[in-house]
Image 1 (cartoon, rainbow, N blue to C red):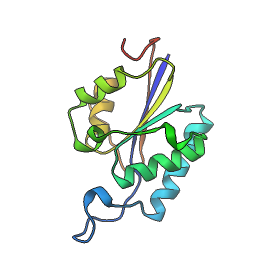
Image 2 (cartoon, one colour):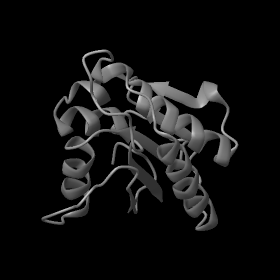
Image 3 (cartoon, one colour):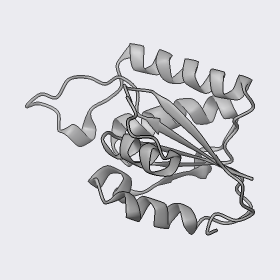
Image 4 (cartoon, one colour):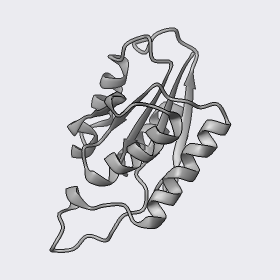
Length: 147
C-alpha cells in the first residue's frame, strides 16, 4: 500500500511589487493552519516519510511546519522546481512513480491548480475544491510507486 498526501501551501502574504511571487511568505494564519493540518494528518496516522515541495518560500515554509510535526528531518524535504513551475500533472506523476519503494507515504506540497488537478486525476473525481492548506490523501493498493 502506498499513500500520497497532496497539500496546497498555507495562507500567504499578498502579491505586491515589493515581493516576487516566488518569495512570498506565510502569514501567521498560514503557519497556524499548516500546523493544524499536519496534526490532524498525524492523528489519523497519515505520516509521510518524505516531503516533496515546490521551492517557493511559502511551500517550503508549509513543508517545514509539517516536517516538524511529523518529526521528519529537513534533509527529507526535497525541493523540486517542477512543482512550482506548473509542469503538467504527467510530470508530477512521473516523479512520484520514480520514488524509492522504501517510502510508503509521501507528501507533495504545491500550488493550485496543479494539486487540485492531480487530486482529480488520481482519485477519479470531477471536482476538487482546494483552498490554501487543504490536503487530499490518496491510497494506492500497490507495492511500488511505479505500478
